[in-house]
Image (cartoon, rainbow, N blue to C red; front, top):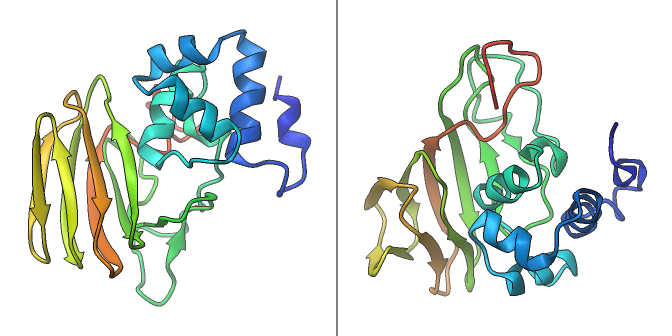
Length: 200
């Protein structure tokens, strides 16, 4: 049965309200959810109060810890073609300062996702850890600081980073200009509910 939060208005249906409603529905404390999602209890609390916004990748961990999937929090655009046209971008509807443009299509037995991420100055993607998968980042414009485990790298236009998601990692735009990144990763971000071959 869908959560009552699904019946709220678009404004009320923020990630924070959905997160709190689902956490309470499954009976988890902030600390229990934090432990299961590899995020801090302070961050979860801020997210519920609208003071912090999880990245799409962070929402994967949170959704898994809450025994649901990322489609609970956002409604991804429905792909109409295997081809993405530059003049018809598909944006992911999420209340975040980071703009996400979807590049992949929901093909059968999909195993990877691809996004363009537009990260404003002074903004970043929260630290993420996933039990399985890979992340690939390529800087199209601007400059970001990327931490992978205990190492920190400054990535400029044309630079890239590729690593396993079991390693804690985060990306921050500390510059005064917009940074635009291509991200490709596994597993699939938006599991199809109609694909019998998809277990996500």
